[in-house]
Amino acid sequence: MKRLLTAAVLATALLTGGCAGDNQEPSTSTSSGGAGSAYPVTVGTVTLDARPEKIVSLSPTATEMLFAVGAGAQVTAVDDQSNYPAEAPKTDLSGFKPNAEAIAAKDPDLVLLSNDTDNIVAQLGKLKIPVYLTPAAATLEDTYREIREIGTLTGHQAEAEKVNAEMAAKIDGIVKSVPARSKPLSYFHELSPDLYTATSKTYIGSVFSLFGMTNVADSADPDGALGGYPQMAQEALVKANPDTVFLADTKCCQQSAATVKARDGWASVTAVQKGQIYPLDDDIASRWGPRTVDLVQAVADAVSGIPA
Image (cartoon, rainbow, N blue to C red; front, top):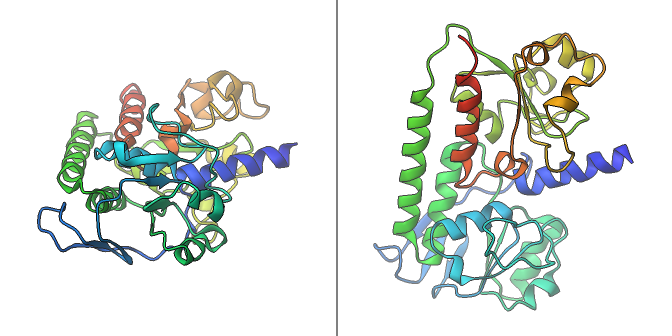
């Protein structure tokens, strides 16, 4: 059961959190219309002759981006993990195991996916269904690029640029509001109770880096061979002694400050001794879309309350 739980947690992280390792080709955005609403438009290898009106999103992050740029009315179906915003037309379609026939049955004129699982892009290509891949972001710039490209494809380029500008301004303001520290805080970002985590080379890690924090998990995947998502041994974690622990497994695995404090062998960890354990919303902590601002705010609120 433990192995099944781990597999489920990591599968969710891969889809909704975009664990590294998708190996997708980077996209560059071009448009034949200067305003971004004239068609045809081309983004990477995707060319649309007209504005898509029946969009299927099989990526929770892409779903959030679509609605953020004002393309929500064009979205006719989303996958079973797309739970935000509430009005997203959730279906039983899967982003884990995408089924070409099931997707085609929705008669889409654009499909968004986070990765090319089971060569689904080629399968949909044979059906003349255009697919835009939104691979896991590694930096904030990746997020801004994907939002911009989604805006271009859907005819909402101006709205996308506004979303990006507002995100960047809010994040900058939040970071600047946190007093500088003479000594960086260390942290452990928990994806599952069996100590799968994210290093500083991931999108999640880039958020903590905004505050100059150091990641105790970096030594568990120094060369990135594990895609930045290693599993730490408890002994190694206790020895690393993080100042703070952030829990991105509060929904999936019902973890909390209380459950962490109750773990055998954790009593000596600084984060436990000082009560510096911070529950996060699993979805917000695992998606690289517009709600990254909320994750940045959550980290800021946590570190601001820790004496320098």
